[in-house]
Amino acid sequence: MYSAETTLVVPGPRTQSAAPAPPAPPAQWHRVLTLLADIGLLIGTRAVWTSAASHRPAVAGVISLCYASILVCGVLALVVRGARSLARVDLCVLVTGVTLTLCAWIMLHNGSDEALLTTQAARELAAGHPVYGQPWPWLFGHGVALTPTVTGGYDLTYGYPPLAPLLAVPLLWLGHGGTPATAVSTGALIAGTVALWRMLPTPWRSAATLVCLGFGMLPSYGRLGYPAIVALALLVPVVVRWTRTGEGGRLGAVGLARAGCLGLACAAQQLPWFLAPFLLAGIYAVRRGELGGRAAALVVARFAGVAAGGWLLVNAYFVVSEPGRWLTGIALPLTQGAVLHGQGVIGISLYLTDGSDRIDWYSRASLLLLAGLLALFVLFVRRLGPAAAVLPWCAFYLATRSQDGYYLLMTPLWLAAAVTAPASAFAGAWQPRPRLLRGLLSGPRRHPARIAATALLLAPALTAAAVAATGTPPLRMRVTAVRHATTATVSRLALQVTNTGDTALSPHFTLTTGQGMDPYWRVVGGPRTLPAHGTARYELRPPSGRFTLPRPGVRIRLRAFTASPQTLSSTDVQDAVRGGAD
Image (cartoon, rainbow, N blue to C red; front, side, top):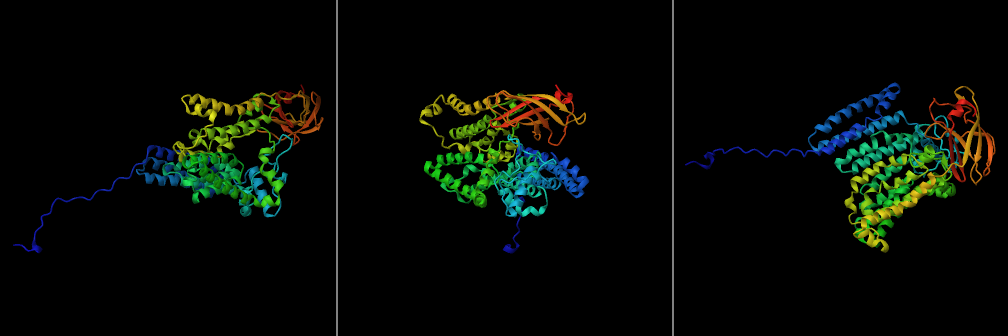
């Protein structure tokens, strides 16, 4: 008999421990999105590298390392096996994009007129001087763009809310020019990009890198010192998951932070003013569907109150120290009467016809379109809710200033809303149904009724735009004499101008050769005001003494703007100015 200690144990078959499960593979669209973000960083990078190679070799070396990072990330985006590994590639793409943005700022940081005005406002603020209503003509010229107005002058004052200058004050040590303002806007862009990247679901994060830092669009606006970039960065946490604001009837810390950021964004630039009504209306509709009318109204009231408090906190000093100039200054982009510019409907009067005597109607059309879109948003929020971050900018397409910057500066918000506020978030949102329309909008014929309601709400804006575009130029202009300083330059221009309208007009003349507006020519002969149905002779001198003729084939347009009423009259004069007199 064997004791327990000597009992032989016959080994059985060896069992293997369970192998770890392979990492979950990422979706193919996630790989493609990462790859697109990686490719987007290549746009514009060569120009920065070329400049750095001859001036700052160290920066060029960093950019070369970024090229290597782009190549490696491109490979890894297609070969890594796990979703977590691909998320790390997304982070590497983000870091590469931030590095390239900083390199570009180091090479190009002097900024535009926006940066110069913001920096000068910061200097005046630091010195205790007034900021608003103060013309600073020495900032312009020498390649710095001017904003001409229909009054024959230029906008030489600061016309934005004060947050950007306040942020630039601590950075005035960076140097002269617009460098402090460009540092603020570029830093804001990077902060907004990182915030959006972090707040989006993991598979979508590279889309933030692509939209904010790729394509070369927004980084260039950051280097130009646009205050709108600061507003964009502050709007990112407002728009991400905005439909959850006030869930359960409580704002909570997140809701309060959103409201504060909205107020600060409105204190940075005017574009958030147009977005705010859509967000407030959307929050009310979603919360009313969940909580009822009274509770939803209280949520929106608290949210709006906190936002207003943040806005007032930034503006308080200026409200007290210079209330009239401050109010005029922050409303300046809406009241300055800047000349037509942009890619919208105003192109009809600028390029396709010889002008219009009803330019004011473009502004009315823009306001009517904004009101119509807001009404449609409220009426059909379940369908239009996901587009809350896009709809406000459509109004600028009919405005007198319809430049594409108003659209593309806020495109990261489009992404934020698309990913975090989908259509499902509006499934239970409240939609008003007036008694007269209740049966039509909810009955079997609701589709034709909705089309009719849409047409009815948008018709005023489209009608106003048509009125503006079909106006006739009130001034008939003819070149009668040209004085050439050289064969390629013009030093004097004589015109015969006839006012065909029933109102006396005070014209201001300029010659343009492209899409922008060149500085006004000086009137050295001719009446200041041309009476109705009157004819007069004007003699003009170029602002710099000489006007250089463009190459043959380039269209030269003589334009005349008037302020009251706002009109534009244009005529082609390339043959006349090249050949002398008619």
